[in-house]
Image 1 (cartoon, rainbow, N blue to C red):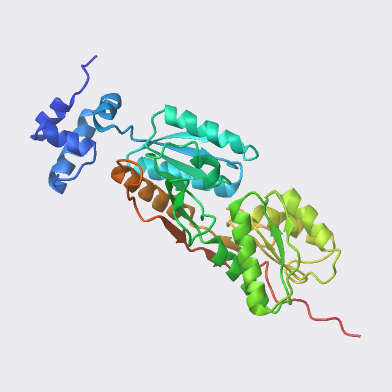
Image 2 (image 1 turned 90 degrees about the vertical axis):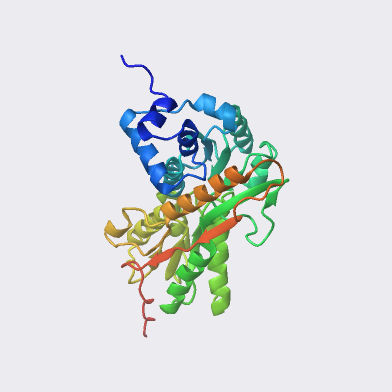
Length: 351
């Protein structure tokens, strides 16, 4: 057995001071790129591992970020959670993940206290957790990232005295474009399968859908709510199809869109000849269905990367309540992916 490699060993091999090694390990400034590269090379060759407990005592930083996730069984939240973990590791942080029950607002508070007990430096929220649900539980010196749009993107970035950073998909613009695409194809109006009311993205996608209809002067039918599952999309679409005038449908996620396509085909209608369908998320299967699905593609990797970068910047600049951090928010553009599930409406029947 060899003795534990120390910072002194790294410094001696790299030909630098222990202070320089410490600056590199803690990712501090005032180290030239050449020296930083040399020290990191020796750290890898020697297999040096910093004493994180000792470092935390000195820096008052654990280099650990807490992730609170709800709804992680769904494609979108699961993709964001995975992206946040990769982004944190790329920034030199470990993560502690807690999965909270989306139906129990108080569980978010319990998750916060559990993470605070682990000495985390920052918290990221992923899923239908409103800032107000958790703000009262978080010490004000801990920065918070919401991986979503805020309730009011143009409003203040503080909640109950906390500076809440946010980075999310531009759901409103994406839903507006998806709906407008169907209207440009010639459909008189577009029906909407919305997600669960508690989810913030449900409201944003509904808002975009309504905006497109209003701008076009198109009739605005009542939205039907599902629970993100194919089964809920199937049930809601079967009810909608009782109205023979349905020719276009925008679903708030791909799973509900898949259920909608199944209901349309079971009714004897065809996609897209009789009813056009657009989904949201661009799940891996979307392009390989019997009718490849037109959908909205979110850049989950960029959302996670930009969000984590802002959270880490806030951690680095936070010395107490009210301290300025990174720019509060960023809405990431999405892309409408055109496939075979959308087409002009069927021609009116002739006598």
